Image (tube, rainbow, N blue to C red):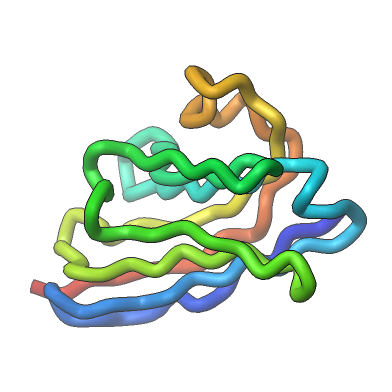
Length: 123
């Protein structure tokens, strides 16, 4: 099982980025993928999750600005981030799991993680 996150970078406030999480060793129709982020000095925060069925979930902090999607044929999950704010600055990680709906944002529900990609939003 492997997850490879990419797409981070430096962007101005109000800008957009698209993160990718390429997975291998399993199928996206069998496992869900979540995006978490961790800012310096803060705990890892769950921001979005796409279930194996395709259902999606968002944290209130990103709802309406971020969109999670997937391309099953490419074994890739995306996180489109629009209207970025300075508080979105963090390392972003993708993780694999099958949590119940109410626990999707709990990091301990995910056994496998990608290496993280840094997003820096300048104000």
